[in-house]
Image 1 (cartoon, helix red, strand yellow):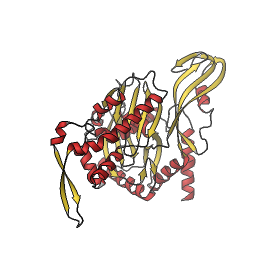
Image 2 (cartoon, rainbow, N blue to C red):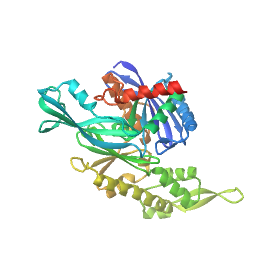
Image 3 (cartoon, one colour):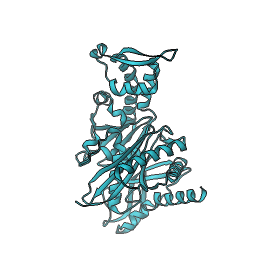
Image 4 (cartoon, rainbow, N blue to C red):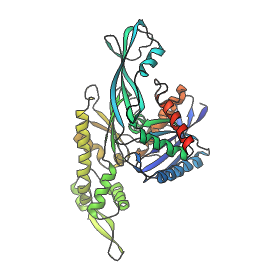
Length: 411
C-alpha cells in the first residue's frame, strides 16, 4: 500500500521522554521510522516540576527522532499522566420528542454539559453505552426513534494548571499539540490487539513513579485509576537497603532482580560497587536472594493495592479474567506469575515489538504509551479530525486554541 504521511507522538514520562515518528499507510498500518529517547528528571508523577529540564529532554528526544526519520517535526500527539488525572462515569440525557435521532442530537448531547469545572479540564469524553427510552446497551442510536436519548460517558479530566504547563512547554519547544491523550488510555491501545477487544480487559501500566489501571469494555476506554507507586520505589528500596547509588540499584534490579524468592537464588551471587570512605570503589558480594528480599515486599504492596482498587471499582461485572501488564515495571523477572497469584486473574505481558508489523526498530515494553499514541493518532488521522475523541466536537480543540493563543500573546 502507498504511504500517505507521517505522524509524530511524544511520550512524556517521569523517567524518560520518547518521541516516535511513524509512516502511515492507507490500509491502516503504520511503520515506525524514527525514535528519539532521553532520560528526564523534570517530571514528577506526571507533573512538570522543572520546565527547563523537560524542554531540554524533549529537544533531545525530538532531535533524535528527526535524524532517524530524516524529517522535521512540527506537530505531535502527546500524553498526560499522573495521580491528578481523574475518570468519572457521567450520564447525560436529551429529550428528542419521539422523532428520528440525528448526528446533531448526539453532538448536542455531548455539548450539554460544562466540561470545565473549578480548575479542571476535560481530556476525553468517551461514550460507553447509549440508551433510548427504556432500551439500554445501544451502540449507535443515530437513525432510531425515541423520546429520550441518554449516554454513559467516561469523562477524563486533568488539572488546568498541569495542562497549561504542558502546552507551554511544548510551545517553547516549537511543537504544535494536535491531540492530548491520557497515558493509560494510550497504553491500553498500545497493548490490545484484535483478539483482546471482544473481551473486556484490565490494563495495568507499571510506570516509574505511578501505576495506572485502565478498564476497557469491549475495546472502549471506560475508566481509570492511578496509584502513586511505581518501579522507581523498588529501585529506591534497593539503593537504601544496600547503600548504593540509584543508578547502580536500577542496574541490579534490571539485570538480577526478580519478583520471586527461590532457593537457587541463595547460591547465586552478584557483585555490587561500594564506595569506601576514601572514595575507593570496592565490589561487595551478595546473593540474589538478598536482592529479591528487598524487591518482593514492594512489588507485593503495589500488586495488593491494585487488587484492592479493582475489587472496589465499578468494573467487576462484565470484565474478563484477563489482565495485561505493561510499562517498564513489567520487565521485572517473574512479575507475570507473581501478579497472577496475587490478583487471581490470568496475566498477559505484551511485547511491543510483537504488536507492530514491519517495524525494524526494536522497542521494549516501556514504549506501550508511544505505540498507543500512534494508534490513536492513526485513527484520528483516518477520521479526518483533530479532536481527542471522534464524537466530541470543540471540547479540547477549543481549549487548545485558547491556551495556545494565550501562550503566543504572553511570551
